[in-house]
Length: 264
Length: 218
Image 1: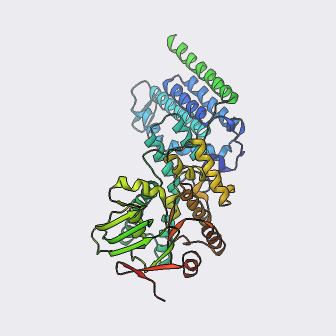
Image 2: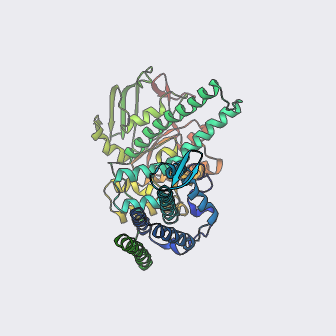
Image 3: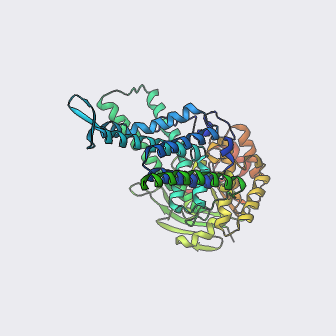
């Protein structure tokens, strides 16, 4: 989804929405991550369509509460649909069941349509909740919160180093591309183009490896011994309790409806 | 007792011709030594050898009164001699400025609060308190350079090893750096192409030529 996350908008919050992030802005990042996970878990486990639609409505409500700009956020959500579009189109024609309609020789089934709808609604609800609750954080805050949630340290380090060096790599890429353009390079469908772009990628890899060695050297110089201490202090407050309680109530409602529907 | 004593250092990067061929230098307490030499003469290599990031093929490195050979010998050297890298992006890897400065003290076993106090103190001394909460990759080139110096000073080193510190600095920031460096009490080894800067910081000068260090002439 790289093309959707352009240079100017790293965190969704920077798309020009309310800086404070609405009502959800003040909620502890850890609570938001846990909330998004709980939401995803409940939504994925449910499969009665009205419940899923309610989950999507809940995610939309969070979107409104977060005061994010609607259009860019929904566009990001739609970017995810691109990945499952193929599946959604094929499913009605491949799932066995009662025929609904036919295109040429292919017959779509009601069961297939229902499954496709379930998947589409589930995926969108989960992605929307994730965008609203987690996508609004500064990437650095996300790293700190994950670390506090006892995510394995290696993974947190990977995330932190990615955050730190992705800009450096990008700047390096742009410098090399400019240097190529300055000497009249224009990408075309030719062997020369592919070879040159190959050199570009290779050069970036080599430089990245060399840089990583220098960074490790610098870390050793300051006594690095395998742990990177993080300093951010996070504290749960009444607002987080309200958020957790509210969300738990909603999710419990969704689960109860689903179970009641399955039982009768 | 000299702080550093390098004797007959030989070094070659794998697959390349030897870059250092019998280089030696002595750094006395309080001395400020500049090293000059052509591009690729091995100046940065020499600094790396001094803190044990590279291991010489031959020759001895003695630091703070002891000969240092194994990686473990150099842990103490790295604490007492702070290397400021040529490219600040290599050195600043923590998300925020305060975290980056506190990284060294925390590794030295300081508590969270002590580390934060040290970070605050160093930032105050360098007049950089406004950068405290900034994200390191969003700093300007000059700010990055000054912050790398802060990260090293937070370890309270006895020697500063500076690798091209004026690289990519504008005149204001370079003047700022001169002001800070001249006020510091530490002994220094300075690698720089900038003649005026060298004259201001470290009048003693050695030239690295054909893998050896000799006193600068003229």
